[in-house]
Length: 207
Length: 213
Image 1 (cartoon, rainbow over the protein chains, first blue to last red):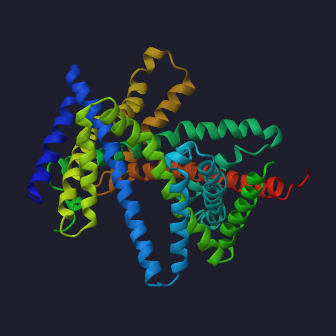
Image 2 (image 1 turned 90 degrees about the vertical axis):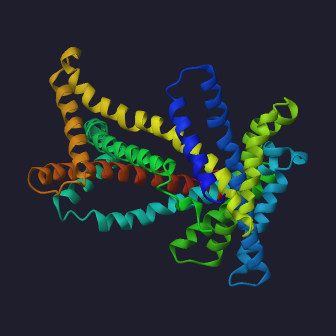
């Protein structure tokens, strides 16, 4: 009941979805659209809500027990409440100006600045990774430099630099990306098969 | 600029500087901005998914259009919440099983086609068809570079045979090709991050401090 039925559901649904891909009948296509396209996002919304509920529970617990740095948990709760309140249907839903304000002046600046911080850290990481101590490190360094200088204006060298960068991106880089994609694809298929056949069960957790 | 926008620019400037303060060391300003971000973005995702997924794809079809079968994904979704209580946590395996069954079943043919067959076709098929395309010398060389690159990189990923002798040499070529790919990705990432940094500095200088206004 606790394990066998879920495993059976996965097995039957998994095989059904594999086979329906090859059946061009309208019933098969309806089931694909209804079950495969509509259901997972709906269940996903509840899964996200589960995560939010956990976040709220953990934050409330930290505030109640006056944990170390509990004030920041309160900030999280206030931020969440402010956004959710602004998004209520009575205040205009997702097009509410307060939601838009919070997105423009809180979310966007923080996200953009956090990612821009990586420019500094990536520079120090590059120094360590790019010391041309071997042929492979030199290849890594050359390829990165060629791609980076593609964006700089360099007078008469701009066009040759752009052409070289385009060649690196369109051929050796494409070959590497394709090999990685093939590996990733085979990995996904084998993991999916392991889940369908019940070999991989770690997602079930413990009893 | 209206009042709310002016306040917004000041708030955004304060949060931008708070995040940049991490470059010195972890501090209360950074922690404040970080935790605020977690709360606000969690709320934003709830709003986004409620109005763009749950409402049009489940609640409206069920209650407005009378499509009763949309109750099934809603019940499955609600069952996910049984995970919140220890005694009933096992019930959440049912919706998870539905989700995984669908996702894995859909993934097998689609991923096989998009990530394996199409990529192999793009690498091998082009070379095989070159005589039909009346390709020039440059095109032939470029397609051969792709073919050798893909083949040697795949050999590097092939662990069923020890990488010695000819296999070792081919896999060395593969590592070289992969390094070029990683370098290109790194270069792109650096440029993207630098662009973001420039945009943030421009915001602080021109929108907040009004330099040159």
